Length: 430
Ligand code: UD1
Image 1 (cartoon, rainbow, N blue to C red):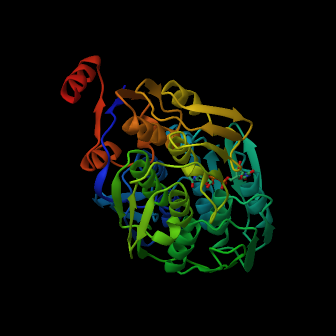
Image 2: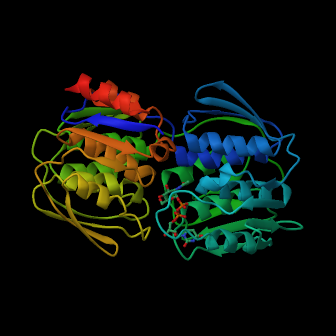
């Protein structure tokens, strides 16, 4: 089993290139099979989740050609099977996008119920409600979601919760439905807009993505396209917080600063300097960090996917901070691991009360999920001594070359897979 060994204490300094947005890529890859023509997608991050998604697409007959590490050519022309039971696909939450894409194109789909990060109950009732509003019959049998319709017809859907997944999934299914679909209380995340832009580049007619109300005029056919995925807001934010906790000076490059506003605002509040330019953001942490309060919210609020990273920073900030998680109900599991590193955090329901400590100390810990795993790496980078993190497969679901990018900023981090390698790492790092 691979682990990360980290020797903390080095401030991160330098520039880092941010890759394509994983969560946009997952939906865009699935959407690419909605035409029989060829689609070229650039800036696809080479992470486990996107690779699993492409593997599932291939299992039903999609032809996927990797042009280079981040560019893929996809053809959905030869799809012959509308049943996705691939064992891997259960591991990624975004498997539900194949449901929307296949239902939208073929009026029928059967996909294994999604899994993904274990961060609380993750129902898909809003996806199902949306498909039903388009006239589909949806049922769950033998662990599969089965959706079928004679013909999809546009409908009016009010989402009971703001859901990124359901908004995108209904957009996919409605792109070729007959007539107009209106999604109210839609999610406004940058990747919702990116998926709408992608579908529009294939000939769809989607207006209002990025606002509460999305209007989709069904078209009879989608065509091939070439498209570049937006940068990953969460990968960028993770490096920005890594700069903050290591008292570093990091410029994240190839980003859209507007997408990072809530993250930049919190970093400024806790005492960092944040400089924005056209496609880069520089974070300088020259002063001691101070406490703040934060509540996760749908975009443009502070992202739930950045909650563990800000908690790690606040754990080292002067004073008492409060972090409220309002999207997922079980997203503080990593706090036990952080406590082993010396943090003083009390969790009550969906709130963490954090008393800042002056340092973390290295420990052997496990990554409980993707973002919490990345946050624990950041804690290790700031800690005194060596930290060993297990279960890094979770981190690799969403971060490409995380260890290598951190190394390029001066971090002492290595992937190891034996006691012997750990001993070597300890000897090397002193
Ligand atoms: C996506 C992201 C995930 C991020 C989350 C919130 C992907 C692959 N994952 O997940 O990284 O943390 O958005 O920004 O893009 N809900 C329902 N019924 C539904 C759907 C959702 O009640 O049918 C609830 C969820 O339990 C949660 C809230 O709505 O409390 C938001 O979830 P949602 O935005 O759908 O998250 P995901 O799309 O699963």
